Image 1: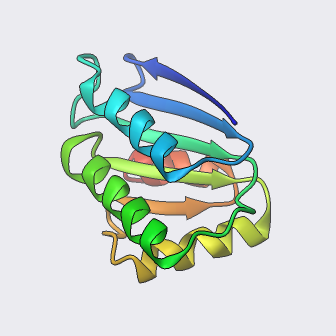
Image 2: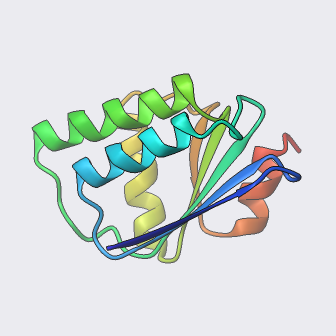
Amino acid sequence: MTVTTEVDAEALLVRQHIEGTLSVAELGMHIDRIIADPQVTEEFGTLSYVGDLSNALDEDERALFADHLRRLGTHGPRKCAVVCKRALNVATTRFFLETADLDPLRMRAFDNETEALEWLRGS
C-alpha cells in the first residue's frame, strides 16, 4: 500500500493518493497525521483518490474504520471527498458511508475529481 499526502495551503486542500490495500490501522495512522498537521485547519477539505477497495472488512473492522473516519470529520478538515477510479468502488464507498452513519454533509464518494472539488468548495 502506498499513500502520498500533499497539503495545499493556498487551495485549503489535503490531497491523498491511496494505492493498494489500506488496512484499518494504516487508515488510523494517516488520519492522525492529517489531524496533527499544524497547516491543516477546519477550513480545509480533504480529497482522497482511491485506486482499489477490494479488501473486505469484517464487522469489527468496519466499526473501527467508521470510527477513524468520524474522528477525521470531527477533528480534521471540514469535508472529505473520496474519488474512486472504479464505479463499483464508488457504490461500495457510498454504501459504507451511509450504513456507518457518517455525516453526508462532511463525507461523500465521487467518480470524478471535478464533482468532488465542486462539492468541497460548496458549489
